[in-house]
Length: 200
Image 1 (tube, rainbow, N blue to C red):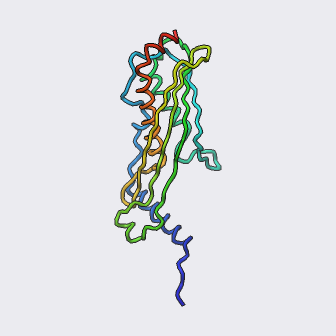
Image 2: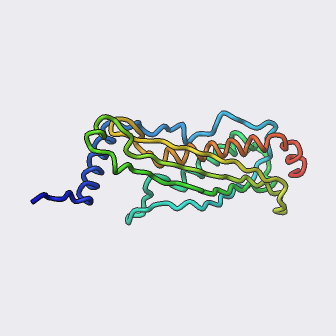
Image 3: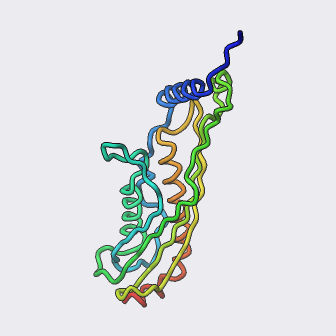
């Protein structure tokens, strides 16, 4: 009598094999992803109070630690962008800068249909997609909106058994986030003189 393959067993086996392969061959996390970009606005806004509104769902272990992406990651990057590229931190604070993050898509696609022998040949096993929209609002000291700038970032990265990223979801999300920030900053650039005048 022919035995049927248990789909659950095959999924578990595939997961174990992928994990072993990725641990042995993945690229380490690049700390440059946590730094400010090379694009700096000129002239710069005066120092401002920072706020972040984020709709991303963060995964937390029972011990309270974050799996992959942490809200501190986004705050760290935005802090560095503000102090290095957007404002002059050594002036008096003149208003508020609010970052709104809209996570449109942040998902994995795992190719369970890949036959195991082909997986060992290096076929893609996991692909992660991140599509993010950010909005940077500039408010004066009375919290009146004087400028609003949006940007979108899209990133898709893949892992195979022999090549990929150690923190695939985190790297994909941060890359898309940085691209969205860069686009919003470039839209701010033509308005900098007007924003500075209204803030002062």
